[in-house]
View 1 (tube, rainbow, N blue to C red):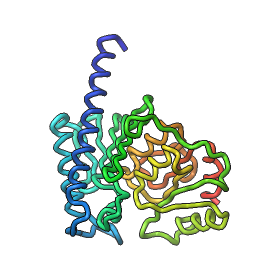
View 2: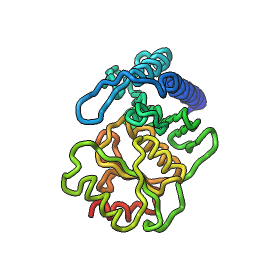
View 3: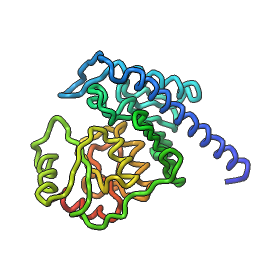
Amino acid sequence: MGRRNAFYYIYAMENIKATLIAAAKAGAAQAVHYFDKVHQIENKDGVNNPVTEADKASEKAIFEVIRCQYPDHFLLSEESGAIVQESTYKWIIDPIDGTVNYAQGIPICCISIGVEKEGKMLMGAVYNPFMNEFFFGEKGNGVFLNDKPIHVSKQTNLDRSCLVTGFPYQYLNEPNGPLPVFERFIRKGIAVRRLGSAALDLCWTACGRFDGFFEHNLNAWDSAAGYLIVEEAGGKVTDMFGNPYNPYQPGIIASNGILHEELLGVIIG
């Protein structure tokens, strides 16, 4: 890459970063505005799959920030689905991850936005304004919590680890599904938590609060930002069979890397 091209690339990345951060903060402002109020709640397909006026307001605010700078970029969002554009860039957005928590007044929820170029994740931002925690990761440039570098844990013993998972509200009894896998960990006496926000589960794995995370059924907007953040923090992310992770397939295992093969062994059974 020549000097001139390098300059333009750096400039472009800095502008995307600034837009990403501004979009996450704009969505968070709406989430804070509506928090702990009586919510207008609609139910989408499935059980316990709500959407509130805050989800819609957050999405609208995020879209406005992105479209102001990049009107021709592809948008993929939980509430609006795919807004297709002929662009190599795609913004993958969850306006509020952890909506059930949010609607109950539980502050374990966040705004999650990933930026992808030509199928590869470039940047991710996950912001929980209720805990004042802003996670930002950029491919090849590390990951930060409130501008301080973070790293996955150094736990080497699975039996002493603290894990986190999530359960879908359907398909619980499928062979080797969420309940049988959860039971295997619990019978080993391993601590497993369930917080209700996959994006935060990934970020808390990235900063070492958890040693690993697994979930059987996620969408791209749940994990796009968080999985990059784990990888940039030194962790490992795969699908449920140990293959390279792709946010467009459902299952995920994320860990500090040290425990990954052991985790995989228990999950595969």
